[in-house]
Length: 331
Image 1 (cartoon, helix red, strand yellow):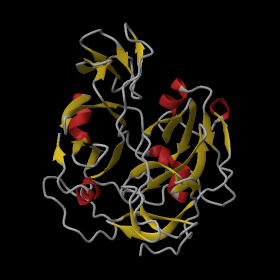
Image 2: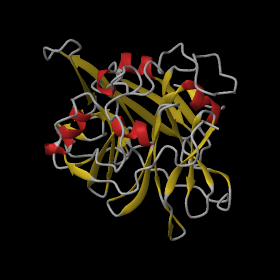
Image 3: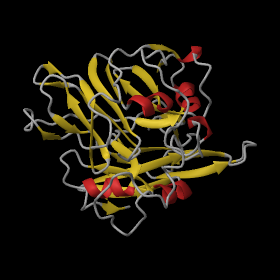
C-alpha cells in the first residue's frame, strides 16, 4: 500500500483543454507531457499531473491513459482499448517497485503503470499498447505546437496546482519511497536515466542522464536495432523545488531510430552562444547537416520535415528501471 485508498488520488476522467495561446500561467521551462496522435497535439502539465497521476483521454481518435508517477518520476501513455472494450483507469493506491499501480474500473484488474502489464485480475492475459510521449518544457512544446491543446486546471478538484508535494525527492542521494528491492550498485537509486526497450521486451538499455546531458547525443544497440538518444535543455524537474516551475533544469530527452528510409545517420550535438547562461543545444546529422528537434523532426536542412521513428522511452530513476528491467544494459 502506498497510503491512499483506491481513487484517493483522483484521476482526471473528463479532461478540459484550452489552446496553447491562451495559457498564461506556465513558464517556458515548466514541464509538460507532450503527446501527439494523428496530428492531435496535447500537453499535460506536470504541475497538474503530480496531483492526479492519471488522465483518461481520447487523442486523435485513440482512447489513451496518460500517467505520471512522481515516486519513480515516470510518464507512460497507453491505449485504453482492448478487444473492442475501452477501459477507464484509476489510481489503485497500491505500489509495485515504488511505482504507480493502476486499476481499470470495468474489471478491477491491477496494472503496472511502468510496463503496461496486468498484475492481478480478470485481464491478466492482456497487455496495454504503449504510445511514445516526451517530457519537455512548455516553451519548447508551444514553439512546435502553437495550435496545440493544454490540459486545463479546471479538473473538478481543488488542488494546489503549481506546488510540488514532494520537494527535494529527486535528490541523487535520497531514498525511494517504500521501495523494498535491492538497488544495482552501478548508480545510486535516484540517479536519473532514460530507459528504452525493444517492442517485444527482449532487450533494454538505459542512458544515464548526466552522461547524456554532457554529450547531447548517445547511441546504443538494442537487440538487432540501433537507438540514438537526444538531450536538450529547457525542462524543469517537477520534484526539486517547492514549486514545480522552480525546479532545476534537467532538460528533455527523446530516443529514435537513427535512419531515414534505410539510410543511417550520425548525429552530433553542439552548444551555440545565444546569450543565455548555458547557450542553446543544436542537434545535426553529419550526412546532410540537417537540424533536428527533440521530437525527432528535421526542422532545417536537406531533410526538413522528415521524422525519425520514435522509440517508446521513459525518463525515470535508476532503482525503478533496473527493478523492472534487471538485465538492462547501460549505454
